[in-house]
Image 1 (cartoon, helix red, strand yellow):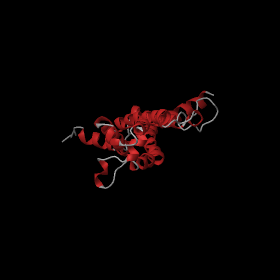
Image 2 (image 1 turned 90 degrees about the vertical axis):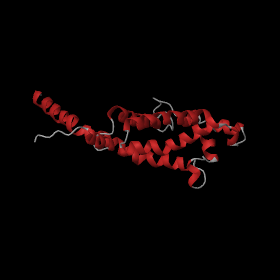
Image 3 (image 1 turned 120 degrees about the vertical axis):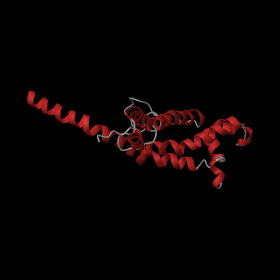
Image 4 (image 1 turned 90 degrees about the horizontal axis):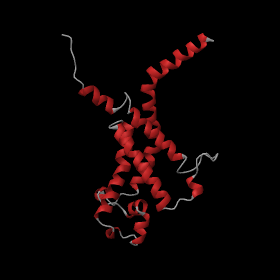
Length: 189
């Protein structure tokens, strides 16, 4: 029995020490790319205004999606909302493009993942209190169902992102490439 436990410890110790530091952050970023990158980019595209200047002039959809109750209160005339809210909508729209990109390429991975966690929390808040997502669609933990749009699905999103905040982008990331280039090179001439 001792030999079996020793084999188990060696096998999984090696996995944890040598393979996990490469595999896990890379896999986390790959799963994020495969499941959420286009979700956020497509959502961001619905918020851009017309033409090339649309990146600086959010569309009607941006205000209706991000500030639904406030937009309704001003009869969907965004000009009545003021500069602060315009900047907030603009930054939120940009965030749907920039933050996922940072996570996927592994550039400022921890900061990008932390920003995405904030984004998911804000998005969930707006969905529940702004758009009125029902308690049934919201879901509930420990209810035996895994299909709640907010509490179930987004808990996994946040866990994936939290892993990247704690562990970083891993050795197969732009962060690692930049770190290796910035470290002083020693030579034994």
